[in-house]
Image (cartoon, rainbow, N blue to C red):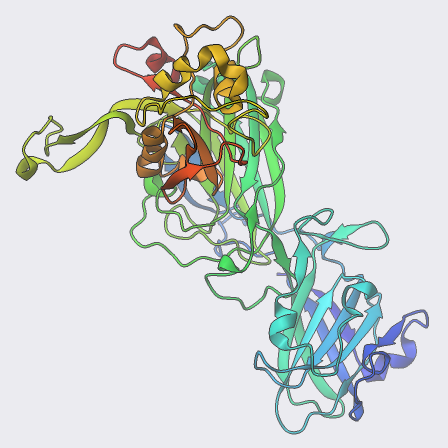
Length: 543
């Protein structure tokens, strides 16, 4: 595997470019200077690694495994090795010295070097114990020049520094010259002496994902005219020094979000194929033993990163008439690994072949039966009235959840200046609640938004989409699994009121309570899927 080699040595100092800038932030920040000694530094840039190690006889891509089901054919393949790209070039680098290797060790020296030409570096002479030397490449001078060497900057503090989700081109670093590059980092623990040799391997602090996507023959005829993709459960911090971290990382230390929705252009002219690429921050998780490909979404660790592919068919009025969502959790296999590791290149070949309710990766927004009466069933799936023979409990009616949140984020339940309904309404029947308030829907935005999904000319008699009741919203939590992962970890409105407050559900935890109708919460609408309902065939896969 070819490596990019940058050698920094005292012997070649005279040949170094004279326009290289050196900034001694130690003296600039007023820290006490120890004796500075020259150190020979050798930097190697590790090419992007693949989860797969073996090569084929032809030396080309290696297919780790291919999983075939009614919904997807998916292969993880080895990313072809290429010559060092410009993205891996060292444009500049910082050298940081800490006075030990423990989290409480403090910054004793920090120097910035522009360019990548051959040079020597100076470090502070250590007193017989190892110091941690960290190199960060492709960050600007301004990135770290505020760090003090007065004992206030610990190794732990430094390790928590990173690029914020709101910064341009996240998780890449936007340099002052207008380019964006992955940050490279590496470290070594050495006792600093004069002319000590420090060998440091630099790794990308991010991962690269490539998805070669194709729409199978049967799916081309399903009527989904609009396709989108989105990377979700993304850590909102990309750490400058992500090497050497262990699961779970970053865990609960950061918030998580989604990348912007992207379009997929499937057409006959492209052979119904497309390519998706993304750079992702590190997100490490413990493995989940005994996970099968079909249960991969269900068993996914909290906040594990996934790709979501959405097919929708809009009506002439713009309402979504049918939808299907595929979730592919990233990792080094199709079962127990869910980690996005630094300096890794993940390449997936995916063919969408159909819709399958038995595969947790295929979501029809029908998580289960969570409407009507709670009923017991025996081991054969028959209704059971005796507790001793009951092995499963579920609601008797099946309900479909709308593909997305309705409205532009958080909204109120009650319009400004309007009054609440005089009487408490149903805790279990959201459709009745919605039809009861139909004539005054403008007073209740959370009711009106669901009614509007039914299109122009809808009446209370032919209403399909409605605002779920308290019981139905709680049922989404109880039986939701993969559907829950498409909802925010936030509070959602219901249609159930007590004439003063409105019931709202923290959808990921099931915590429900009465909230002020002027509060700001999310909204997700539902519709019935009853036996004999023509919509059932419309929304379910029929092989």
